[in-house]
Figure 1 (cartoon, rainbow, N blue to C red):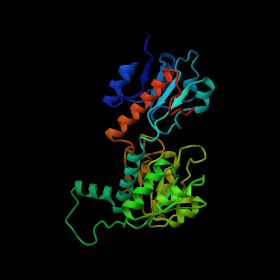
Figure 2 (tube, rainbow, N blue to C red):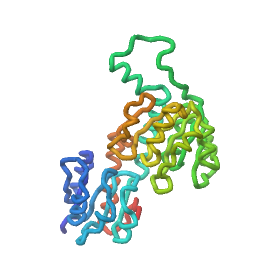
Figure 3 (cartoon, rainbow, N blue to C red):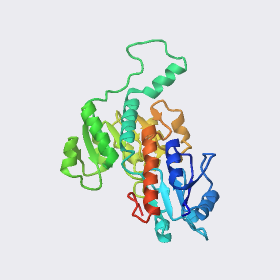
Length: 323
């Protein structure tokens, strides 16, 4: 029986590619740069499945090909806001993602960004590497204490909960959360968290804000100048979720005005382009979307896509079916 043909839109970890080849014919984008919309459209006419990443914009134009062959989009990642889910559903194209496996790596990075922003680690390293360090002195590059402070978490899914556990049990932080859905009391008790009724109340009452909610129309620019005005002037904002949650222009305005103390960003509105006003700031830590970037996690993500593809092409329900 002829093997289904899968298209990888980017290079995946070697272990994953080897395992995919055991079960499928695999075509790889060896240039490892984002495909154009025309190239994506051609891929959907040529292969049984297209295995996508966050860098691929799968809109209704890509999916509207006259001779659509693809029946499975296996997304390498949890978020799928770059895929037109409504169009896929209309055309009978199954979409899967990779939940669970990114939780710990992303929560770890969130804590790293929180600490880096509070203790000015990015500015400190640049200061040293640029040859400007003249030695220790009592008033040099003072940051803010982290342990025992209050952390506000916006969105309390798997990653938000994992971040709360690390912050509370590891650093003795008080945890306040905002979630549109009621959080069961047993989950709140694991981190001694308090659920607040509105986002503005949370923003005004915490020392750190960490974003962990999905990207959708309702959440676009949920952190804007009006919301940043609610925060303490000593507070820090961290985003490891999706860039569209933060209005980057407003964030720069808030930092210029001293409305907040600093920020840590792993995701951006127009990746890989960065808002120019952010690039020159020493009170913002910037990372190139490293949330899930560990060898173990990226392998697990790829193998999760493989598991979904094997289920789909054997006539079973993919375990991580989105639509």
